[in-house]
Length: 514
Image (cartoon, rainbow, N blue to C red):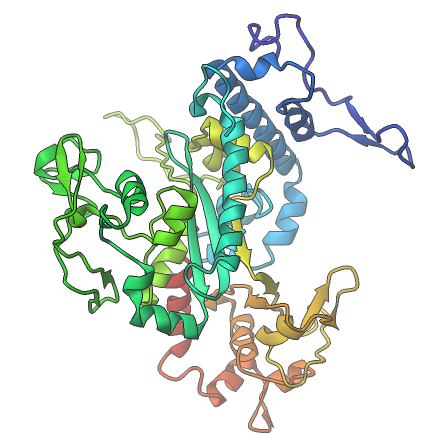
């Protein structure tokens, strides 16, 4: 790095190299020597320390470029390791479920040449898919110049926000939360959250939705503090005819459909979308010389806005279609596009048989990647970009004699096992959960219908209870069938091509652009 950034390292200080070792601190027991990774080295370097002046943190935009370069080096080092370990990765993936997703598009000769970017690589397409189914300013410097501090402060705010949802209960008692961290092109992070409420709290919100979600400006005569926060953080625009050059304008129309219509009361349309109460109260705020009234207010929860003094858009979602859309939206990953010309085009070129190009997921991910300084800082510090609560247990599915399984919950379906049992990877066995009140959700791994018997076995596991052997899974109404398909037919799961309907419903809920 000293040769690339001579202004920052004018003494030629050596950077990371593979001979660096990590040794225990003085006084600790063991004295074990471990290899230091590139991530450890630069994560250590990007921290301020007591009684030590850090000149590197004061270089402004040059520091931003340094952070991006460092993170790209760390990521490329990880991808080089992935390329070297493709034999082990293919052994884990190709006989399994990921290959089934693209089975209809690939021929057998392409399987061995595919370069796989595994789900363990944070931020990759497989990583995002698997998680569908968790500032102190310096003088003369702005927040954009201190990407490392923005990342730390935002991480603290995210943890504080989730804790407030639990303890402050601004929306009532909730049973689960899922969030994803994304970074805008200008660099600032933002936070998408889904909150599942208990049925009692959900019914209360639907009846008294105006008490939890508002789309009106508070009256400054009775609530001056609320008016100040909402007018500063929750107003859209100006857009439309007063400002045709707004970034979200397409011709004379706003892509966000502002200004909204006045509504005397909140109602839900046929698609399940909420149209919030927006009365003509005469209250407005001024921005860029334009009066903005209740038609320009973004829906919000007053308690959340007053607590965090930030833009927090709150929406009520009760439609299944909208919930599936939200799942795909927050798990879509980063925006990217790739274009490539694979061979020259000329008038005298002869037609040649098309050669199949090996799929290189690592290179496809690199070619369309955009990294800003704030995302680079976030990833160097190993902060999570996805979080879910309660935890989720992925349940594997395999045919008979492929792997040993012992069922001990004779009254449970396979999906219900994580609620009362814990899977121990080392012992390859289930053990009864000590804390039965700790919630855990089970999700069976996806299997493509073209896998035949494995697909029908998965269908039966969703319905059969108390099975102690694979023969019990194939038994319907005390009759054991030879195949899982015949058992599915006897159970009424395949009438009218129901297996294809189930497959399409799962694909519509889980498929995304990645």
